[in-house]
View 1 (cartoon, rainbow, N blue to C red):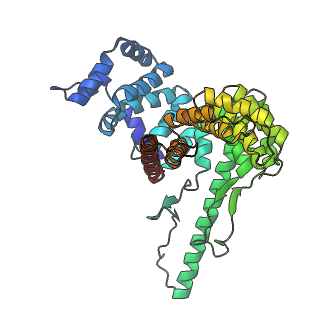
View 2 (cartoon, one colour):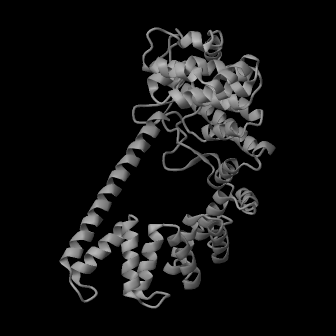
View 3 (spheres, rainbow, N blue to C red):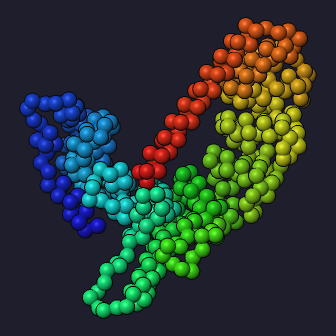
Length: 435
């Protein structure tokens, strides 16, 4: 950390930004930076920053990234100025600057910085009451690869560093193996101790007054209590570890999640309502059994507040009848609400209700209109139903032309879904490789 802070502090000695970036002739990147500093608002903020205003320092660093840092090359060129501004704000005791510096480290903008440096920035900002820093610290505390001796191997598995060098003493192979075992087990204990300290600090920060009314912080705290914080089995370091069992840094305590979620739900907090809806629907957590009344209560509260995902979930569950049995009045009400909001899945459910006469009078004219609307909203199932309907003459009339049109639509939608899945998988791989 000392080496990194020395490098960061060196950035504070940089000359004024116009001197740093003004060159002749200007390339596109330099021109973009020059244009940024030529703006009237930027000039005003620079004056405030030079007079010691930390808010202006952070604003300038954020804004230059927003306007000119879209590609990696530009981002690298503005790093010295951003560090100068953030570190200046930190020296002035401005809490949000710590979150910004932590993110720069985690993004790889500062090669001297490590994940432990980022964690320390988050901790300092969190202790000053910055909610983004609190959440950032908690997120890192849940990451199994965060500790002073942690890294990943080529397969993405946890590696712990330890000193395995001989100390010059003569040893037998057996003695050398025993010494290596001791060092490995010491590394495992260091990992557990640090992760335990991080986890408990995260709980304390998320439970602080600064985070008490912050949705994202309370949602993370509740989920930690629900799921605990797991760690991998340290079988390559400790002989007493087993790969056949689960290990926790913090064990789940669902009872502690309940008052947090209920308090937030009473404020119509959408994430809390959604989580309570799912907990009482699935019933897989201690203290949160499958409960029809509570499921309807929280799902309808979220839906009535504008959450159409909850409206669809409630409508679909009550029409399908699993696991609570059917209630077509409730189901149709919330499916129609989600349908009116443009959700293709709700439109599809209504189409099947009219097709099968489930909870409503059977009406194929209305059903087909709804299937068409669902297909035009992107539902593969709706488009495929229409293709099959006209191909097989389900309504008593075979129409190959209509079948062909809807089959083409279904195929196009399937291809779009496949491309979307490939893109999401690629993004997931990129995210994992950078974590």
